[in-house]
Image 1 (cartoon, one colour):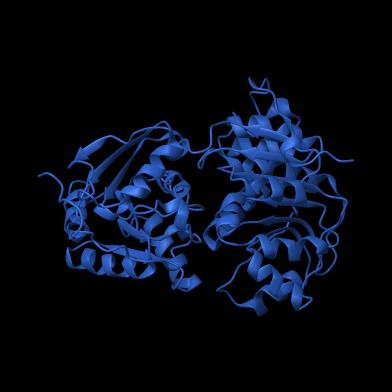
Image 2 (cartoon, one colour):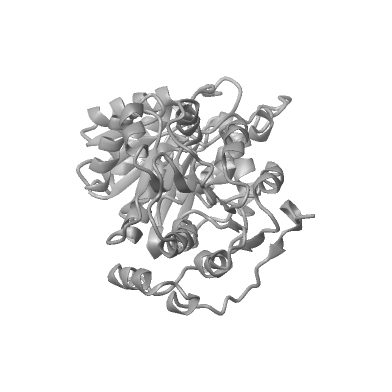
Length: 431
């Protein structure tokens, strides 16, 4: 009987393979890596790639910004280069599932970079884009398909693609897929896949549901964990300000004024909150944009490109951008609202200090966000340094509100309460 889930083997620590060349990657791929200036694997790559090259199922646990895409991408490309011939019409040889459009685009960009100059064909399918154009591209066959679960199911229902030949499956940011309720979509997709396949699952955290997910998709997996869940990048300078809700917009402008020419990513809890904050920044003279679930794919792509190019300096986003956004120039991340799901704090601040750079993560905490703050510090096993103010205290005799773990909602900034400022029930911060 196959060994599943929590019974998985654990990859050894102190990986001996310290170069890509020592892993046995094909010469064509090694040359491509050399052209890109890459010769030393990150810890997650050093642990996962040799196991995946042996055809084993892999469960990879690592924080954001550690090179997880190449950790599964290099073995996938290696396998594709070893297979002769082209994919048949409508068929897919390898499938990568990711929870958001932004993450799909980022994965595709990395894989297209790795496959440049090879016959390997990379396609993407996401919601918010023309499904007919996607159908036409898929009709010619695909080597590597990167997709969001919802749009993939739409295409399967239309019989626009055939996954029965897909011998490779990757679930990326699997914990966020669980948070966003994609477990049922994954169960619909599974029967379409070849039973004879290699599967890999990558995640930044390990919630309890992950055991169920891994048991359903992985067979006798090797577990590669290179950092504790909830750990942020070492080069991120974190701090927190205790600020009344009504004071947050003006306080953010004060903070941004200190580094007007550097890229800053600002996270809000809701879509409407992002739009309101954008208007405030426009009035303050900032070149800014917002991305969230109510924006079309075209709007989101244009905003991200302008931010990446430095044409806009501030990007306001919901948790739709907490993962899948890889812009090394981002030096500042602001948690304008603390997230309801504490793990998302780690993913948010992981948008800075990319590729070995340093960065700042600044959080604002209003009176009604003390539960969120406590939950964040608990999973991170640290106390975030206080930059100004002091922790809010309940009025004597008042019971504290439930913390965010008792009222989890789906990620993506789709809805949720706006909190309220709590000013009538809690003391104001010290000046």
